[in-house]
Image (cartoon, rainbow, N blue to C red; front, top):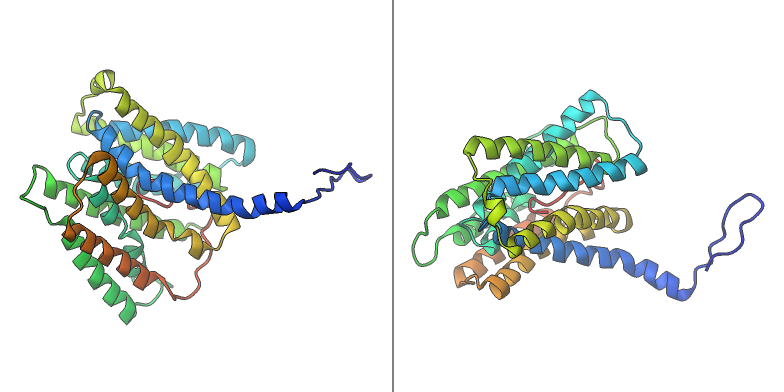
Length: 328
């Protein structure tokens, strides 16, 4: 309910109980959106790359999302980045999207979506581990070493092929490991960028730079772009879902959560997303869920929990980090 404007031109807003309830619930709805949307992107990727070249699909995805973000940034941020800022955020975009996300999409041609999600879930583990190598980073502890060991055992169980080695299995596993390391490098680099830009501007630069890099990758490996013309309705719907929900809706919900909820609460998406991905892969694509997969997944999530909980308080996620999931 809105009152009349005062003499100063301000507007008095009267919050009713119902309005207050909605205001309190909205951040949690946004977090649930992050859980579901970013967890489901693995399923969408798996559907898309069965028919459409993965690098070209990723290029189109981030090109469309980047143009939308650039339009929003022009209206909301009204910031003109310097050449140095453009170079820095473009580099982050290449690490995040051009390399990491591109490799995830390439790997899912042969790797089930649930396995891909569980391996990508190790990113927080590697972030903490490699953070100890940089000046000013968190020093390694027994908890970090133990968590890393447990995580590696989990990765071995998840990566182990069930019922024989399928064609392209190990190249896909290696690609996913490189993807996690590239995302880790991009995350650590984003923390040392001194001259930051607003969040929408950062997202636009990173998405457009990632798209350009993916276009070059697609060209170099010789992907067959004619596949777009014969792709099924399901593949196109999957790609549209990645563009709209994975890249725009998911990001917007994530950024809103960071402003409204504790960073530690928002960070729980790292534990929930792989569970959602495994469940959806099994339900919709009938991907096998073996004892080894469940055990390895549990160990990976336990390792991430072990290394991320009860650490020194970290600065809240900054506006230089518009994306926070290798698949998101």
